[in-house]
Image (cartoon, rainbow, N blue to C red):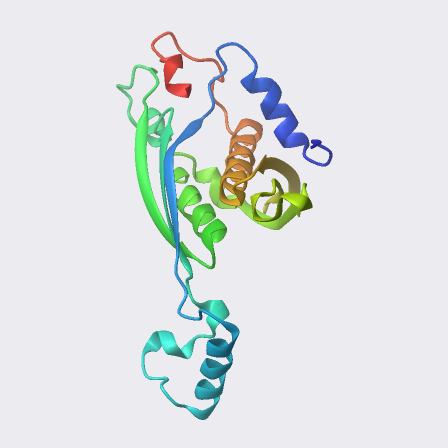
Length: 213
């Protein structure tokens, strides 16, 4: 596959090939669970019919359309190189790099939405700037149709910085569409921090390169 239209991923690929480059964060692990009470099309039709007739719509959640219900839950654990507010607010801070781990959970409309919410929620305490970054487009392309459900998927995500309306794109390919999506999400947020935040991108002497795998 090509990186056409995904300059942010190209820049990050070159940076990661640079000796002692330090990404601002790492995803240590993640999981995504999908759940849906509408197993087939018939159950969806029945739900809409009952809802229109006012049958079985008692709980608060039943007042929502199926498209408004959370259908997935994601857990993301990240490690940030430092906790920004510690360095800024603590006058006794010696300037050394702090490594902070944070675990967050989020519900979403599908596994990719849940992962995007959980990842952003885990990163914002260390990098408040990311609250200004929004996902504005998400595209999936099958690269080898003959492989059927084992096909490789190409995920392209567009991000927008809300104050300046600046946009950038990231891309990732994997036979697991969830993994490809998360990798593209990680690239998007990492690029945002490199472009808009001020911190050293070189690993300090006490940073363990083995952690990068």
